[in-house]
Image (cartoon, rainbow, N blue to C red; front, side, top):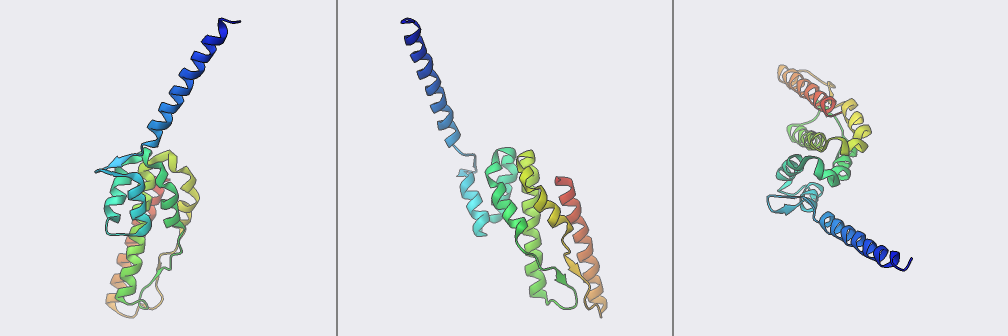
Length: 165
């Protein structure tokens, strides 16, 4: 028993050392173009000037960017008021299209992360089922053409979500 005790202590210290090394390695977060993932997530959260590159960073990092899933899910959970053709002016339509693009980038990022983003399945399904285009008042040929273009965009967005799910 006396001989077993020193060996047990050595094994215990070796195990503790390995755990410390694993934690130290785990503390290093993924980096893309010299910036840690948390910085890219902050850019997405803040919607700052680096947001497009931040989405590319998450997509490039793929499954190791799983820490971005909550922020990406938050984007999908934000309220969305569909485009009302013939009612919304160009500035409002532009803002709503930007909101749609934001969600598209979030969807693509979740798809790149893969199975680690499974917790986003319900928000993805809700976004896929969200009505994005309304034909409230189509009185001109231009409004009709806008409606057709937006419906085509809407279809592509639904396909995007289905391909991720």
